Length: 440
Ligand code: DOR
Image (cartoon, rainbow, N blue to C red; front, side, top):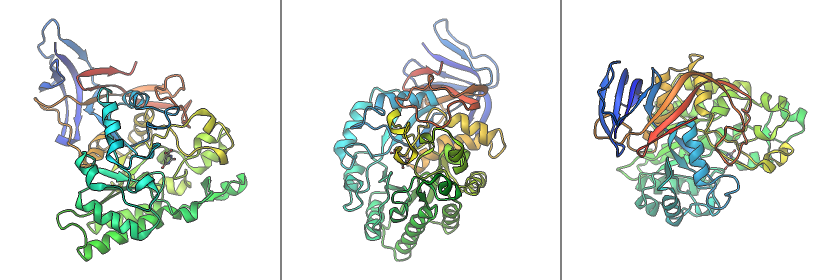
C-alpha cells in the first residue's frame, strides 16, 4: 500500500521547489515518485490518498534546541512525551541539549538517548556537553562524541566563563569538526537576576539581568575565533564553527553581523518568545512564572532588533528552546520560578502569524529557518523530495486559525506564556519513519 499526498503546495527551499504537486510514498516510507501539477496521481484501490487541497508540504521541521529532561527529571518531560510534543508541533527531528541529570558529558549518555529513542516518531539528535557536568572546568571527550555521531556541543543553560578553557574548546572542537553552540551569558553580571534589567524590573522590585551579559560573551568568543584564525592555531582542515543560541539583543546581533561579513563561520538562532514578547509583557502579566527564562524577555528595542535581523537574514534559524518545567516550579513568585518555557507546539503558529503574515519574511524563508538551516548548521543531511529518499515531511495549513489551550498540549509540562493566544497557521501533521501522524 502506498500513501499519496495529492494537490499539495510543495515547498522545499533545499531544492528550490515551490509548486503544486503530489508525492507517492511506498509502504516502507520511501518516496516512489513526485509529480508536479494539480492532476490526480493514478492509484490502486488499497492506496491511501490524502488530498491536501493546497496545504503546504515542506521538509520535516527540525528544532536544534530542545530540553527533554530525560534522564533525571522525567516529571517535567520524557523522551516520549517530548517527541509527542515535537510531532504535534510539526517537527520530525529535534536536537537535545545535554543539561539532563546527569549531564550528557560522555558517550554513555549519548548511547542512552539513542537506545531509548529508536522507536519514537521523531529523530532525536544528541548535543554533547562542552565540559564535564557543564561546569566549565574540564573539557568533555569531544573525539568520543564525534565517533558516536554527535555533531554539536554545548553547555547550554550556562556558558564557559574561563576564557582559556573556551580557547581550548575552540581548538579541540575544530579537530573533530564539532559545532560549538554557546549560551551567551556572563554569569558574574547575571548572578541572582530574574528578568531584564530595566525600569520594569525596578518597579517590580526584581533583580535585573543586564542585557550586555550576552554581547560580552559573544564578543569574547568572536575575538578568540579571530585570534585562532589569524595565527592558524585551529585544525588546518576545519575552521571553528560557532553558533549563538537564543540570541536576544541588538548588541549581540551587531557582533554576529560583522563576524559574518568578516568570513567567520558564525550562525545564530532566535526563539519565537524573543521575537514576540518583551519585558513589558512580563510586567503586565498576572502569572509571571511563564515569562521567566534565560535569556530574559528583553526591551522593546531589542525585540525590534531581532525582527530586523530576521528580516535581513542575520538570524539563520528559529529554535524553540523548549524548556519544560512542572506547574509547581512556575506557578510561584517570579524570583522563585525555574527559567524556561515550552515552545514546540506553538513555534509554527507564532512564526506564521508574527513573521509571515506580517511580511517580515516569506513562507519560503520561514521553512528555511525552521527546517533547512538548522539541519545545515548541525551538519545533518538535507531533506529532499525525490524518488528513493526516505519521506520526511511536515504538513502545514497556513490558513487555519486556532487558540493555544493547555488541554491540547502533548508535552508533559504546559509552562507557556501563550495560552489563550489566537494564531493563524499550524502544522497539521508529519510523515516520517513510514508513518503519518495527524494533529487532530
Ligand atoms: O530558560 C532557559 N531554560 N534557558 C536555558 O538556556 C536553559 C533552559 C532549561 O534548561 O530550563
